[in-house]
Length: 415
Ligand code: PMP
Image (cartoon, protein in one colour):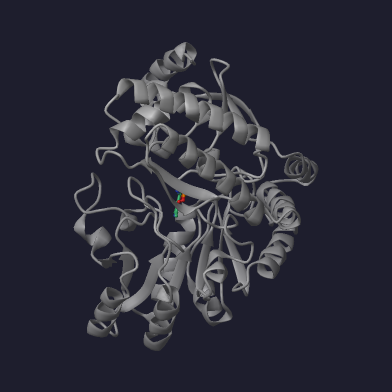
């Protein structure tokens, strides 16, 4: 199995230079997402479905940079489009005309979109969506779902977290996923206070089985929002273009007022987009919102190549099929050793855990064994498929999973 000497040496160095060495969701500080002892801290290169760490170990990557790797790392069509744009310019005083080309493509692609607005991170557009909702309604409060993730802006965090004060979160009202009655009750009790309902298209929290919307859930929420003048904002930052090129609201049969996109927009080139309906265009135009690099040209070139290629490949369908093949196999192999591997969410973005024990330690052990053999999973976060994943990769992953189950079984004869 793999060793990580160079990774650990570099991590020690990084700890002296960068707080926590590798911070945020890519690092070990949030420990339990990844099996720290079995974890490669730094990559040296990446191609297609793989990345290599600084020890030279190769991983079939099921985290896909937490989403952005959708076509395969260093996709040649995307990188060529970027190289062409680089010859023309990137960060310029007046934005490049390619911004308008990309806006046109996005508006043509995403079913609900009458316009598109660009920023850099997912959190930029979730925060902007709330500002727009407040500007449009003159109201203050937002309904959010317990366990939902919308970034790191103070309003997205919890009271009690370091750096967060009461004023940051005072306008948030939390409900449970799939509980329509709870939302209805809050709206009826506060008919003139709720600016926005924001949620992901299905529930993909960490540490917990993922949940799809119950039948008619979104249709009922849509009607409630329309009846009470509430802006319905969907955070499609993670699911966007892994369920449906027309948007995940379209996939679940409703129409959002605002849609937040980021991860799969440009195959790793850095930008995000907010799409919306004409009814909100004046509100959007009225809000002060901008950033130094938001209108840079390279990501737009990447975005055009990426979205066009995803459409050509029918990327969401392809990734659902690959994910189904992979996870069906993992479940079968687990079963043959007495493990109940529970798979939830959607196959292109599935969540899994060994359900034999609630403490999740068996699952962590198994994931560790898989990572040390070259199948990169995180412990308690949803995983991702990309279009470059081949049948051969899936077969190899099944072999790695089999060996890993065998090791865990040997350590736990009671299973
Ligand atoms: N919303 C969701 C659903 C996300 O998954 C993320 C990123 N993990 C964000 C918002 C925030 O995006 P970013 O980290 O690019 O600000």
